[in-house]
Image 1 (spheres, rainbow, N blue to C red):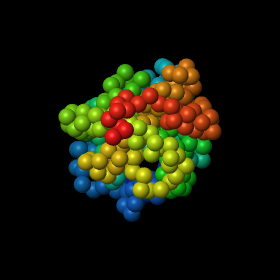
Image 2 (image 1 turned 45 degrees about the vertical axis):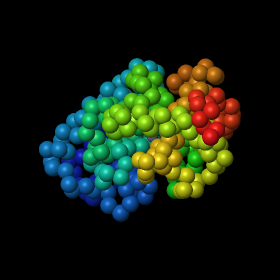
Image 3 (image 1 turned 120 degrees about the vertical axis):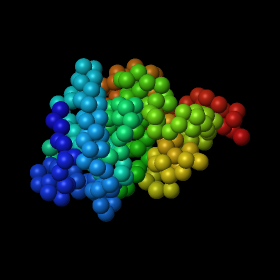
Image 4 (image 1 turned 90 degrees about the vertical axis):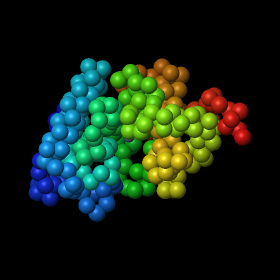
Length: 274
Ligand SMILES: [Zn+2]
């Protein structure tokens, strides 16, 4: 896997075509007006670059050992403006996992989310129909549910993590993660119904994949919880290997996910039905 490191240069001077294409994508879909961050010292940038690079290499090596085609993807490291820690996209040369190193400070969050973003890139490389070229595609519920579910579930399995670790790493205090998990379990039926009813929607008011309001799981990443549960259920029921999951067509995966959203045995149905 080729790694491009842009952490020690101003992004405005970057001339390589593939890199410019990625920076335009980052600005359009994630960053907004500015893509630079001038608040980190050179020393802090060097520390975070080393942290992210070490985990990107470790994650890529584990993926390679487990049979994933890591030579099909590239990685880009840059400082970023703090709007998102990473994701993946397609350009004319293939799939890119990108990492805004300014967002990474701790070991566990870096271990978890470098693997998570590399899986997004592998998934987009295998099945380009899961990537996005428009804001509407980016926000489409089924696309977010499936891609985030696969990235979260496979990260859990590959690093042998708990649900809590793969969903949040150490980004929140442990007691806050526990109460978030409890709230998700207690609201499983409402969450599953909401995702099923809005499966084809790209309405921005469906806030399940963003971290807008820590007091309300419906605006605080509960979509990741459902995605992980749904993909875990599909992988088990249909005996899909880790690599198989990345190769299911969008039509096939949408059908399996809708079936699972309809038939899932809720953890806490009595509470959910209130
Ligand atoms: Zn993701």
